[in-house]
Image 1 (tube, rainbow, N blue to C red):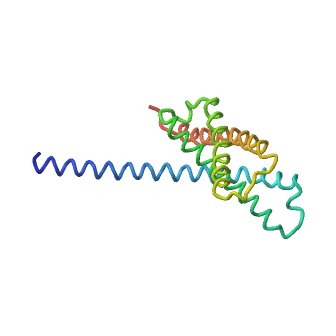
Image 2 (cartoon, rainbow, N blue to C red):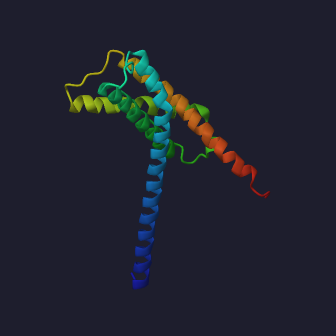
Image 3 (cartoon, rainbow, N blue to C red):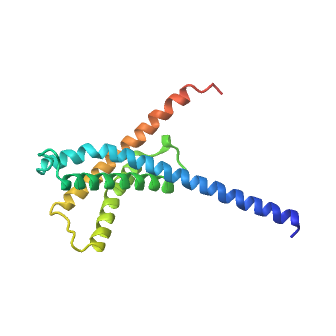
Length: 172
């Protein structure tokens, strides 16, 4: 191989590594943003759940109340990030406008239930003294429903945010 071709191949591989790294970091940043949005959407539900179970009745709140809300929010952020990564991996050929609501709903249910269930399984394995509450399956089912609602809302907002830019575009 000539020196010129070797230099060109090296330049192409460096450029490919840079662009793939930036694309990966952009996807991870997007997943983090979606996760934070899901955390903000799920937090009021977590507060209502805590109040209905007898928590958050005293002020200042007990550390267990803060820990439960923190866990709930972490589950929400992980579920949102999982949804974004699933969507990026499995629906990469589609635009926001062409995503089928059923598929979005399915990815939302999967992310809403799978991420908290998997994290709980890992934590139970690492810390045998931990235990799940009796109504854990109901809570996980509720998280799946919240995942579905959050997924549909996320896509609806993305479609809505995208529409004005297309309306203001010059005619072709």
